[in-house]
Length: 240
Image (cartoon, rainbow, N blue to C red; front, side, top):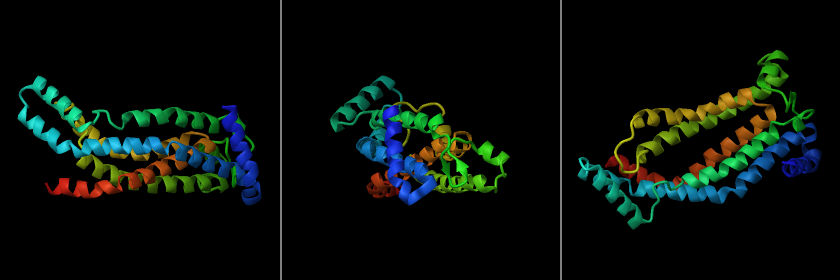
């Protein structure tokens, strides 16, 4: 933890001539981007796995229809299809799980006492939105910083909401096995999770909120780029 904290402090020192009192905030944003860049290969692996699942989705649907009354035969057929196409039924899950430790480490770093005394314009990096509301209100100097962050998160969430709905429509949540109870509800709720970041930004310290906003924005646009080649496939699936 101290190693990462030292790196952020060194970045802040380097950025001091450009950003003055907001150098630490700029260092958090830059450091978060560097971390996301370092784990980008994992994101690419995850995208390849999800594309593979989408590619074989029509074949899985055919197997479900063919063996609807024989769950054991369906399970065997699905496993044979996965082996033939060299696709894991959990393709894309492991890379995402491997990213979690890095994200948790960054969150704890940016929500610690080490951020005390540093600011993003008029908002202390160690304070919360509640502190801003109690010191000038929502439109006060510190409150305005949060309003900008909320606006960024809302715009990114709206973009991700539309993209996730398209992706779920093209790629069912199941893997060819009997339908999971509540799958329709999950399809409806999952796109709305994009807006959960608004709550996170409101309750964590501002330094951690900067990390969350930067990482979330990176994730949305990274996935938009990684899945850009999938759009023609989605269009064909919709027409079918």
